[in-house]
Length: 403
Image 1 (cartoon, one colour):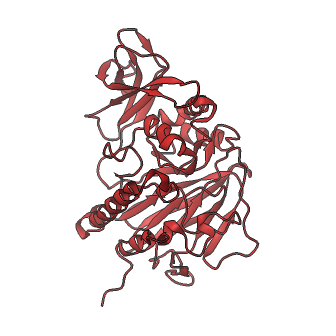
Image 2 (image 1 turned 30 degrees about the vertical axis):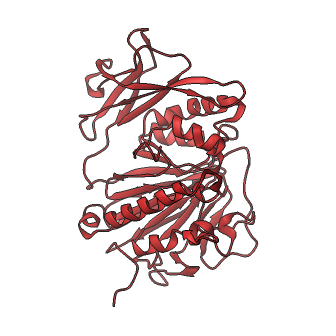
Image 3 (image 1 turned 45 degrees about the vertical axis):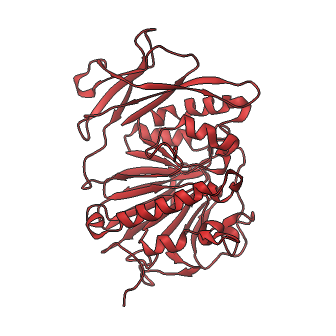
């Protein structure tokens, strides 16, 4: 488990103190980390120091207390708690999913914290667009947002992917403020990890829309993703972690009326960058048997029928999500931000199963190798679950029929 925090001043040491929660004693084991200077490129050159400590040797599933700070200056944070990730794949992760969550109009925050105080989640997946924007007010909005989500992010793995609102200064706030898995070259922009019976892949859809930064990164991501999916889809790996879940900010499909990429007949994310005709993801997802694709960007919630190349591939008429013939897509971008809602088209597409512009977020529980549950919580309706499905798969793998 990795903990990251920032201070406005340089410190001589970067340390976290950790101890088992069951002992009822203050955290007493010191773990040293590292720090780096981060200067916002804006006019005030707002400066802070990003600190990172990695906790290793944890007992799977055990609860711990910790605090972060510096031994030399003897300055410490409050004490936080977290639970170490469970071991292996034979357990049932419960995850909060949302995107487009800002410091202003953070409609869903209180309800998420209530859920978290009940111990409901094992992780949060924030599917792009954080703070609105991390760089705003010379980076001070980013500071306020990080403080705002601290009750969640200090207790749970807070996994992210970049959105379009992170693009300023070549995504510098995103790359510096978050510590995600992956190599230094990727710098948080794409990576994968395992949680319970699922292999989760986080990608940057923003490479398609900020090509002024060059084609080398979308090229690197595309071939990294291809290799990662092929490895995850090998029979021996799917036997251990059968579910493949992706998260990326901009959807392949949506029925909103704002002329975004997902509303077009040939989405760049879906079909590839025009002219060079490269880096489209739908075919790759289909060939490698992606089970669930999670998106945001549209400030609404939309669940699709299993879908491939604009055609519905339901498992059956009465059980569409039982052994579906294509990936299932959901868009969950309505957690709350200052840009309010995105409207829907009047006509519902054939592949759109359910849609709502209520503020809210998605809960996911991966029960086991065959059952994955999703439900949408409406904050506008006082926490009412307005949509839910169970994806059931007797077998995981490529959707391409052989022979």
